[in-house]
Structure formats: structure tokens, C-alpha cells
Length: 112
Image (cartoon, rainbow, N blue to C red; front, side):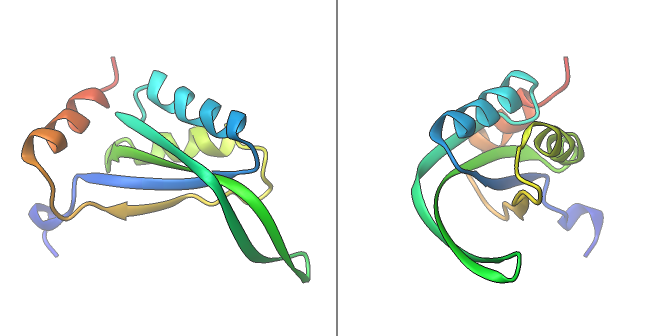
């Protein structure tokens, strides 16, 4: 893959255990221009391995729209702001999208 093929826009997902915490993560990232927008959805039921057992909990998902260039700063922000020991932070490349929307993401995540 050449650098021209590398996606410049990403969606980044995390989860947390309350709607208020999800909203705070979303607002903090957008205010810091680490993401152009963030969507909070939930509750969702998560089933996962943890500490030698299987857990089932309700969580809220936060989906951030950002650029590959801003991802490292967004990840640092989420690790610092999140209260989970091992928070979910997953980045997915956006391989296609409305050019105007993708340009908006780029413009809104420029550090000022």
C-alpha cells in the first residue's frame, strides 16, 4: 500500500459504563479538536473475558470521526481521560465517503 492509498480519515470507537462518561469523552475530544464529531449510542450489552471470567455489562459506545494524523493525540487523550484499566480504543479506516464530509472532518481536526 502506498501513502496515497493510506486512508486519511478514521472512525475510532470506545465504550464506557455510563452515558455521562461517554458524553464527557465525546465532548472532551471534540473540544480539543481531536475529533470533528463523536456519537454516543447505548446502552449496549457487552460480553467479554476479564480477570479469568466472563462478564456481561451495559456500556455506552462512543464513535469518533478523526484523521489519521490526529489519531495518536486522540488515543493519548482517551487513555488519560478513561477510567477503564484497559479501554477499548479501535480505529477503523474510512475507505470511502462523501468528499465534502471527509473534508469537513479534516478541517475540524486541525490543531488551532
